[in-house]
Image (cartoon, rainbow, N blue to C red; front, side):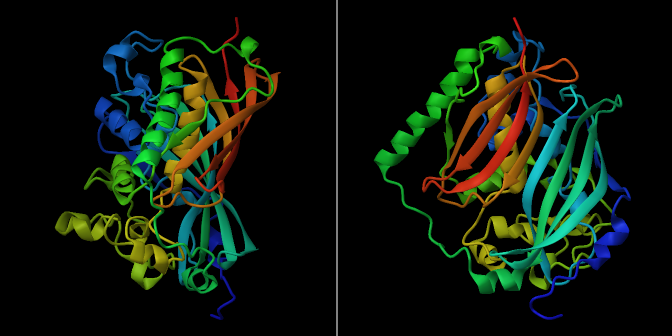
Length: 388
């Protein structure tokens, strides 16, 4: 293969054909939900404080809308990573979500039906020829209720080209003074206070105006410790935590030899689980080890795309409150959240409407930036709110 070629031809035979579903082994528990919101830096008491939740709309702890991806065994990217692309690696490019109404609670057993959708190859400054591949995830509970649909986008590229193009070269974490960190904590609490102020109340569609700004949300600085905490909140990262796929082979997918590994191998997991744990060996270790981050063209250790999607959904759902719901969100991940950086979320109401299902909807334009003002994610979303 020449250096400027990305052979994606093997993908074609998988499009439209279901792959193995994702299946939990055991019913969910409240602590699974608590672990998730803690890892996602989302201090909404509805999802972890049983006394507070008991007084609200649902009468119990419910999972946040971002939680379905935690019940998958590959961050939602499995149907967007089929077909062999030789000497390739993968990062996340975005997610589109549709929510159908039911909420996840302790006792549920979630399964995910997965179908590869499409792909396109584009030239990028990051890695030259790059494959943008999409696949659909359909999450159901054990009663057969459809909870959410996720159309995930993966970015598959030649790691050697990304290293050679060196588009991400800032390898050192930024330094934060004690005074700056104290200021960050104050800014973080401003957002938390907005959650407390709404409490169990309703944010009425009637009172929202086009041009309204949502509260700014700040968190970070990210660190290898915080990223590892995120990793462990995904249930599939726990040893023997889910039913493993038998059709997953990183080498067969074309991952580079140094990054292929045996992540999630169901046989080896019982013999030597550290060899199958993506935190240490395999394609996911680039997130937590700067050496391996640089190997795949990243400047330093970096966050998970699925977590970035959760940050967006949590931010929007927190503003909507427990009587509202994000019904659709289309998110694009433009750059990772690197260690040492902070993330700043803002959104503006851009429209109000009553849709074809007679739902009262506000549309918002979202952007996530870092401390340098660089945009790392954008989204457009529709949120259903109650009316007076």
